[in-house]
Length: 78
Image 1: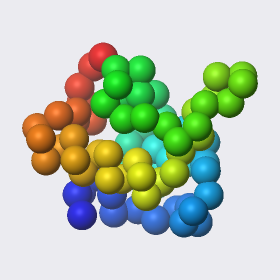
Image 2: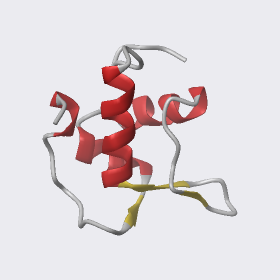
Image 3: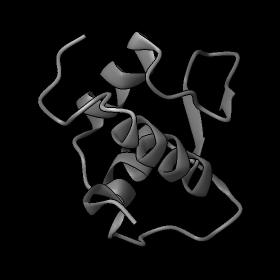
Image 4: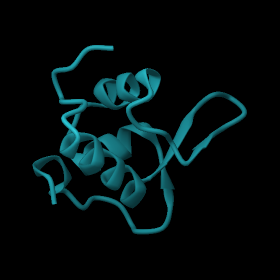
């Protein structure tokens, strides 16, 4: 498990807001939004109003894969 994935704030299997997902993986909400905008990670769903909803387990897997391949870091700007 990567160092960004140590937190377990949300129930498994439910979709959560960007703020909740960011908190669960230990990054700022703006960082997660920036990663999504840049295509580094993909939300499980985007609402009709444009709000992203995240499956935290899937997000953790995306982050771990990205870090393993030398991709996005917390300080990376889009």
